[in-house]
Image (tube, rainbow, N blue to C red; front, top):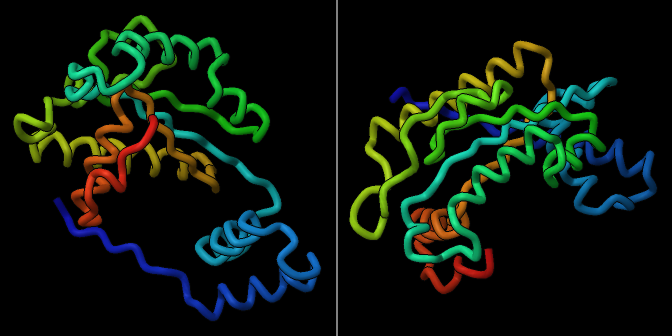
Length: 196
């Protein structure tokens, strides 16, 4: 896989944008939202007059779920995808309020979602393996999944998206996320595990 480098925006641009915001908004009245807007403006070169947000909602199942680490069985992944298609899930409600398009992607569920015409069918595998017994994915699968995500982001940007949100759905995803955070950050699992 090619090496990708993401450069931070110039600190001078960030400071200039922050100062402009502080003049208009009397200090830091928007708190963390103001910090996010400042970062967004620094990364993109300014705040666009019209936002065209898109949420990429990646769906996949996790092999670790077989140990009952979630309050719900894996069938709930399928139920959630059904909710996304009916536009009744929480992500849909938030997206609707933000005027955001939602793109639902089957990147690796254990289910055949071909009956859902609006779900992008880009499955890398039917779920991941149990990471307590070995790698959850092969290197090729992980690279393929990253390429799918990058291609979807490029596609959205080519269609005019100027604010890209990502989301994920899959039972036991919190356990997998906690394990990845522990490995990448060198943290004890007790520091990364909590209620899902």
